[in-house]
Length: 508
Image 1: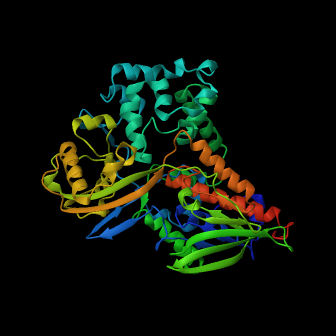
Image 2: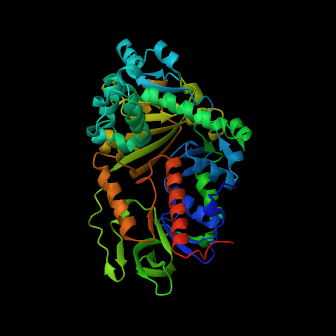
Image 3: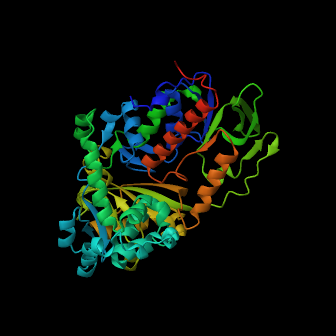
């Protein structure tokens, strides 16, 4: 079981009710943590299934993911969740996951996995390699003139170009952000997309020196830990999935929560709260539509965790003590579309197969005829995902690089994927299987105005006591960050219930 803080370990939430809106991984993680602490939860989901963007499909002897394909354990909340759910035995780590490729001059090039390999590789010019080597000396902490508050609104591209030059941005940063967020270096805010690296520059000047020093400091702290240290050392690190795909995680969460806690096909229409006469807590009610034309209402919640995208929150009606709580301060959020295309090829028809994780395509490689963002070598990563005579590939198209192309027909996208895989891997003929899934709002864009989004979320939480927000709009885009965001919101709810109940919910 996960460790709890001193206050939480004595917490008894029996009798307290919390509504969680949205059954993606953030909402599920929040609801599960609250349940562990004895809180009575009700989880509302507009769609007919829970899990959000974690969608796994098993068909024709194949297993593929239409959303996130892997995750990491970078956030401590992830490890606690996996332990609580007893999912360690179902984790799957990709074979040769350190072998990742970037396209250069129309062909895949192995991405260096360490500094020495980088120096030996031909992925960057000698000038760029030299600039990387010199970065710790050119960006010293004492040179405060280079690190100013003006960089608060700097783009990802501008940040990395200052430190490493344009070639690094074009051939390393550009494909990475396209593959992880669907964005591009100039549209993304550095402060919001890579807050850890942004803070390293503020602290150390050099991000290379800062990363090394931070890692050494973390190792020293770990040496001081004794409890459970031997077990943690044995665990494999890096990206992972689960037997049956990523949906195994959300399916397990749903099972642990129980069907009686989940209200599927229940679109929340409005929220309202009033101040209870006999309690210091707010009394929330939730109105939702479970069938066309039919509206239902649940009463008497002590708090609400909202994990729905802000575009959906804008459509809701919120009442505060009988008066409308206007949401006109919520900014428009830009969302990036993405098409996910699953293909299989007979192994004998792929003349240059690559072992490893996958290949990313820099936007500059469009001049060489490549239109995809990248391709995961799904059956190379997880051999049980396809029959022995087939290669299974997961290819991504769209994002900010080509929003319109993401909306193209399955036939058009099939031809694009086939063409790119022919060039990159020597795939001949037509794929033996094709599946296409389109996400109209795959990712929120962490653009230069994203401060206004976070300020709006803060305003909702401040002006609506007992209202808490979680999800990738607030915590970050990765699965791990979404889980952490949900767990942190649950912690805030527990503290709120605690502080608002005059200590009556503590076990003595």
